Length: 500
Image (cartoon, rainbow, N blue to C red; front, side):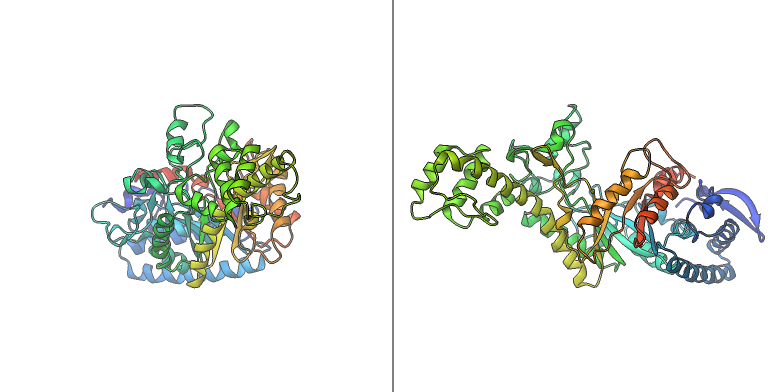
């Protein structure tokens, strides 16, 4: 194990203790005046860090003082946030194996409190790895901590417990339909990947993305699965149950969608663009038919990518006793007795709408299943989504097909308002779109990207974004900032690579 001092840099002495400052964690004393009144003032931050270091060194009195100070600041944070317009202010946090070393997680969570946050969303499953101890990991995914001697270290449980000590609500943040590359290469899981009408899986298109400009997927780590497949549901249930066993204060589901294409692939404009050609998704689509004539037309449409006049004539001959094709949601605006030439364009359109709706419903049903699982255990659930990912584009749809307007209103909605226009206007517009479509009573917590006191060409500083949202939405009660690592890139790198 690395020594404590290898992670910390000597700075000054306070109350007889050497104050060691890690990275840039305390390099922003002006933040208290940058739009959030709940931040801890600089000298109290320094005192808390000094007492923590003494406690880690074995000073019993310092350990007791530290716990007393945490309780006092937790109470003060609670009172301050309750008096603020923004009663919930959260940040997103990824943990690394180095965070298991003594004092590291304490200092990290202390700094989150210092900045006025009262919630933290811990990355519990992403990129094919899960934040569970290797000795207690019943899932098909590898543990984040794989070092010898760390088999029993439960960073997620530690973060939940230590966060609560500080007055933080700690949510588990989990990827959903993006199961990761390691999952995709398991031979026994090849049949569960999402597949399009060209015979490609999201894994094969990810490989091509590295070699060919303009292909579907922008990262080889984003491997999406078929939301209708029972094996997918079983594997994910095992994961979520293991995470809920740690009793987080909530759970947030990310990647409730399909891949984001690039170039022309960013729009799904024909049925073979849809990721519904996996065995389970296709079978579920056929089962949406309400008679044999309807099922046969769906089968021909999916197989060919269209239906012809000859197909309409053929299904009439195959099933002469059935008046017209039927499937879920179909309301015909034209009698089936009309000529084939008149019926054909309409049936093409109806089949397109059916297949798009089927593609969209898979992720929604997936989310609903696991949100209900969390609710059954008394754990609040929420979903993270892109406000623009459910829109029509020309004659097609955004390739992500993220039908967030169908998400359950009983969960939290976390729209990622990452608008890039150089000012807060497009960010406000994204949030406005969600607010207008959210059912009454839905709890909406926008996710903002950026840094305190640092504007970029893409977007203003966090305080400017916050001011714009508070002005436009006076009833808004909560936001989150993505991410803590973006605010502290040097510290993030040091934590990731155990550099002191």
